[in-house]
Length: 219
Length: 272
Image (tube, rainbow over all chains, first blue to last red; front, side, top):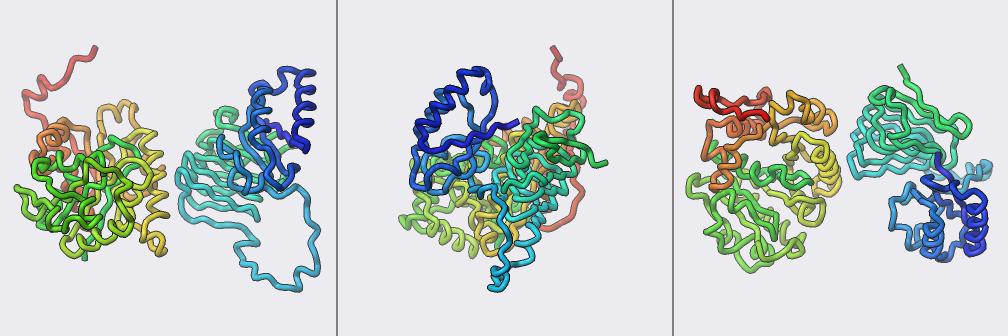
């Protein structure tokens, strides 16, 4: 289970509050991976380096970030979960009727999802935050697929699949053969170690049941 | 119409240079005009495997930078006169390669030869990317082990995105060459089996080269195995791979070593 920490300005004060919380339950962060939600920080270059140093000094292990502005420096150092996506805030936008009057050329693909009809190779990253991603082929070990909606893999899923990128907790992950390194839906994730060993190699779907990820075979 | 072929893998030590030399010699023996080009600038080996290390005067870098003409740098093989070598420089590094220079050299080679076989350096950096840049087809050399397979997968991704052909929206032909295949260890389940590798990489199989002392011995004396020991199992596998490159359809088999009676009696080592 991933914890999400959302620092608020002023960072100094927030770190002190965090320290007080750690003092109350000292083992709370032990070995727990933490996702850092930076959306609340000011847009102008915040003190990322200071924040990261402050967190690591307090024993908080970070595995990824969300909501970071692409221009911010200092976030390249560690393997980020959402490094190449800026996650929009989890606020559902009310559809604006007037918007449909000015017809923006929206292609079928943009509205319905992204279809990839070749394997996703090691080192490749597919990011599509507008909807579902369907892959006809396999996702290799060391590759990652991130989708705003659900992820469908008609092949072996050996890399990482991160669904519900935009805060969609109804997103699911489907694959024909589960060999994944990591599955994540709306910030809740499981690594290969956490997964039930009997599911490996099977057709599987993953979804969120409350705050927990549930995996089950499809056959 | 010349075919530019890159022999690549991502991982080092899987047999790119050996395979370049063996495939080049096999194609040349069938009457094709072949040049093998060493792109491993700074760590050149192809000249050694081809037995031409004492004849290198000018190299790829000299031609890329315009210090020498292409015919001055090409070394024609003494045994097969349709086989030539363009050696790499040992004293420079990959930064000496320029994109424009490489493009010019490859297009000049296209006019002179039927096959231009580029021996890629290991890695996914500049040298490897420039070696694959102008390729029409690729031979992805892979050992039946997980790290090699994953690196090959990464390289296939680069072949589909960083080559000139891919940028024009065309598809580059990719062939899998499984090398250092040990049937005994594979039978014991100590190696990935061929089906697993093919399933992961999902590209067509060009051939399976058995792990063989003939290959190592040939490399060490500067004679590609298809030239020095053409009846060995490894050489036969390379000959078949070369025929598949030319478009023939042959069933891929795992060539077994033909052993003499004495070899069969004494060839097996004692198991501790």
